[in-house]
Image 1: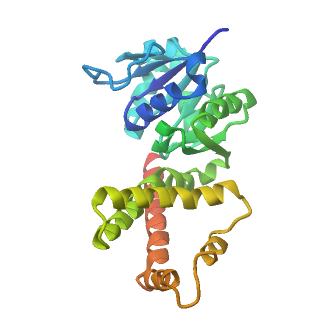
Image 2: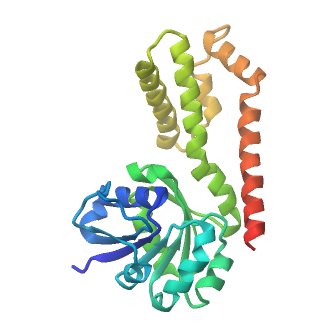
Length: 269
């Protein structure tokens, strides 16, 4: 069976997370990956017979069936200038923040088959929430779903919502890490050592998320009600957190990130 050749243009943090996730997924025997990187590592952090690193973007593209652009927004015009003549008939996937489908179409060509993807770095452990939008080509979106569904879950959304998806899903990893860090610090103050507090915080966070993931009809508030008793310690802790602004701080943080990414998009248009 012919393998699918995937080019990762820009093997930075997100690009490397995609590579690690793919090579740990059921797809690994069905794909070859050529990853372009301006500075090649002396010793690659990932060594695999299905993976090859290069500095040559043109080589990576010419060797591929699917091209994933994972460069910084300001690097994209230069990269397109190099590889555009070699993109015909390839599935093109962009993970670049702020570049809309319309902008990508203008840069890559009106005939291009484009999917816009916004994963997060949990893709390295096959737990990403990846939002997808596309320009109507069914073969391309199916290919993108095949790739990203092995690395977590996917959701097809309107392109106008991709900025919000970036904040909620991609930046969201950092927000949840901060919450886990704060919970860990609280555990240390209560008497646990750092390793114990982190283990409890991480597993409890995973458990809470799993309850909602395994029961789509469940609501966070209904699950909160199950562990709050009249005059109990849980409701007292929750009320103190709300008094200190927990929910409003989270919402304000999300909206601040959204305002920032909106400014970035305006500057790129």
